[in-house]
Each structure stands twice: as structure tokens, then as C-alpha cells.
Length: 239
Image 1: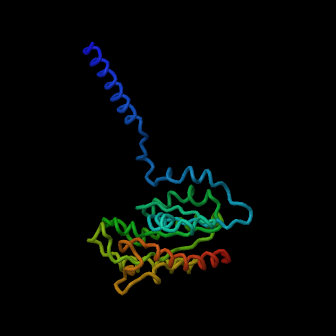
Image 2: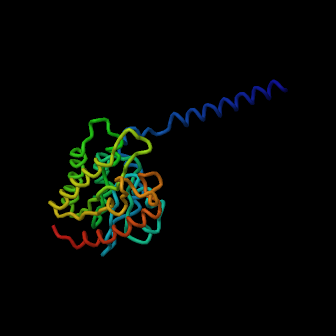
Image 3: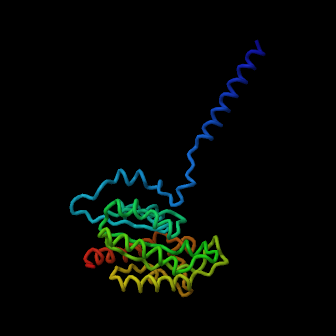
């Protein structure tokens, strides 16, 4: 009897192990989704088109935007503001996502915050000019689809905790100058996140950041104050 029970237990254990292995083997591979299009796919489908008179605004960026709705969700919940930030993304990934996460949602305006992750992962192949190429492509797509463009001057960063060998402060200043010059030329609205957050070392003020890169709630509150007039200006803008 004991032998039969042991044999039965062995069969059950083997079946369970096989089921676990089968489940693992069937796990979907998203390696081809380099830009993480699947992240917001279902949310976009549920969102639908804007209601009549709705001024939908898309926030397109990386972790700065993604963490914003986590730190202060009410800022997005009470408005037609759609946060489409994905942590760690670089400017070509934002460009790939632009159709799904911006154009197809039919917003009145898009706020584009791009460039820092390109700089922080720099292996010598990424330049501010290449970042600008991706930003320009996004802007051209927006204009083609009658979407107002708001270009952000990036937040000040003196050091990346995960890449301390990189000196980003002056690169971000130079990138911001390129962004502002391009925006002025194309009559886009400039949203300056750099000036109200910067300290005397071209980094973020210590009382406004969690790690020198990402704002804390106080930092986001300041960003909200400068974002609102930029949105209103953009909606009035004609080009």
C-alpha cells in the first residue's frame, strides 16, 4: 500500500513539474517590442477618442513623466491629461511610440520630454544632434496631424546615480539650447523645466529631488505650475 501511495505521489509531482515547465515554455516573448508598445496598448483602446470640446494633452517621455502620475495622480485624474511616460526610454523609442501613444489618441497637444536617457546611456554613438533628429521627427508628425507641440527644456541633472562617470550637466544645457532654438524657429511652445529646478551646480535643487534625477512631490508641484501656462499658450498658438 505504501509503495502504491509513493508511486501516486511521484506521478502527481511529475505532473505538477511538467505543468510548470509547460507554462514557462509558453510565456510570451516581447523581445521584438523594443519600444514597449504593449505597455499602454490596452489603456489606449479603452480611452477612445476625445469628447467634443475636450482638450486632450499627451505627456510623452520616460521616467520623469511615468513617476509623475505615481507621485501626484490627482494632477492627471482631474484633467484630460494622458501620461505616456515609460521609464528608461530613449528618444528613438519615443519616436516609435508616437503613432500609437500620441497620434492615434487624437490630442490637441503633445508635451515632449526627451534626451536625458540618451545621454545617460551614452557609449559615444549618441549626440545631441541625433537626439534632436528624433525630436524633430516627432514634431513633424505632430504638425502633419494638427497636434500642437510643446517642447520641454530638460530638468537639470549634475550626476546620474547609475552612471557616475558621465558628466551630463553641460550636455543637458547644450541640448536645451538646441531644443529652444528649434522650438522658436517652428513657433512651438517651450516648456522650461530647467530654470525653476536648477541649483548652483547645474543639478536639481536638493529639496526638490529624490536622487538628483527624478523630482519628489515638491518638485512635481513646481513642474505643474509651469506646465499649465505652457499648455494654455500652446492651445492658443497658430502655426
